[in-house]
Length: 320
Ligand code: MTE
Image (tube, rainbow, N blue to C red; front, side, top):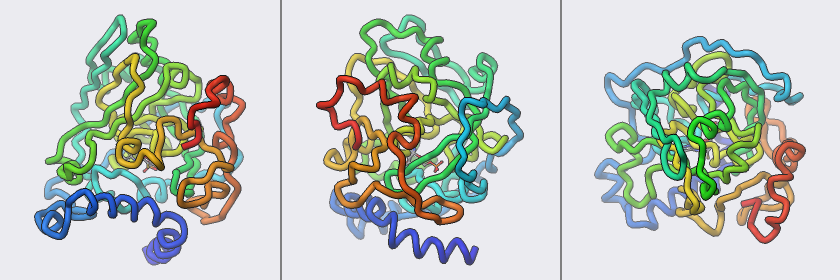
């Protein structure tokens, strides 16, 4: 606890204040002043009484030897306590607030430009896929990183089930919308629900993954239970948590962060150490756990798997 507090002080002032400040400034700048805060749209709102207990049931899965990294694995306690989940607060400390997330039953809708739209409970979806474990890097745009053993299945499996039509160029993903459960969704200045998107080529790349667990257990609520995206070659904000809808579409979706700050957050958001954020460098990252500062890798170390996806797209802003 003491260590966390000390580290919080160091990291938040040196590495990640920009995002938090941006959030708060925009929050206030969009008309939520002191009155709004006093009315209950406060930062880091408290937990519910009688909130559901956290997840964490054992979840067995075969390790996939294709996806391993040499970097040290982030301690599980860090992964489950240092989070970004804006639906539950604008700090890293949202575990108590996220306990309100009701993850069962959890319906998922798959619709849009596809031959086989469907609606399914996440438990039934899991009966149709083989789970695997893969150890991947997670690089947040705020310049911190983790190495996480995820459990889940390739996003390509879900795409295959839906059989997209030829005009489906994108897959749009949407998180739940329930302001009673997620206090921050009462802030109308934000474009809730959280939306993310990938091209179909990205969504069917072998690296794109739907995680339902980590560290050999089902996902904790604060980590995006019961099902979240993992796209390790992109900044962490692309990896949408607690997804309820997948929609195939011909039109490029406008994502949550793009809508909030289009000059700083784009659709592609591929990791590139040479392309700085408008307000800070992306050349290095702080490894959560040992706090070591290490160089950031092109496509977060996954260039071999994904660089080919972007051939001929040089005019796009691929790295923000
Ligand atoms: N998904 C939703 N729905 N809401 C969020 O605020 N934050 C994103 C991403 N997915 C976010 C989200 C960001 S900025 C990051 S870095 C990762 O989740 C963090 O995932 P973690 O807390 O499991 O490490």
